[in-house]
Image (cartoon, rainbow, N blue to C red):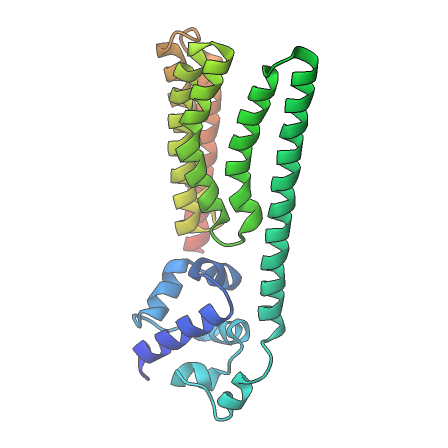
Length: 266
């Protein structure tokens, strides 16, 4: 068997089904690293996975092992797209319509606030805060609504790019410099945690090991926030109550890693 040819076949069929490596791995309850090894020809699916994989890719075992379509595939290609493909296209259109409705509703709400503010005060005051916050919320939520794949990544990128400008605008409108100073420090710590947690979930999937790593990150996040607030002069030195969540997250992380090792040993 030509493992390289089989790997290319798996990759092609996966893409035809509109699946990422991570999504295919989740359906098979394996890691995306295993899928990557199949597609690069470094390994082959084992017998316990083969039938389920063929069902997801809508092919036979012979087609998979030969890395080619069976006779008559050309005629089948002329047939209408399978239900899954049609449903995926319909789902994509629905998501874009929801995104348009969300954007229009948000714009209408901000415009209403402008009109009310001007009518009541003769100018624009509190409505500017509403507009700034609405724009920030739109930048974060639009990718999640409009895109099924990559939406979370888009929202994290938007969060990373626009949080500091949003805090700066908020501090200017409120005339409170501490909002920008403290908010930027908290945002930097939180964004680092979110990106690291996102990387863990992409690499480890929904496993006990992923839970353990995320709990370790949460322990580090809590400790960093407590320390930063103290250094910025916002809160007193951390006491036992501040350190209690850190110890709790560490205990959950230890339990998660122990459970994973115990399951592997069995």
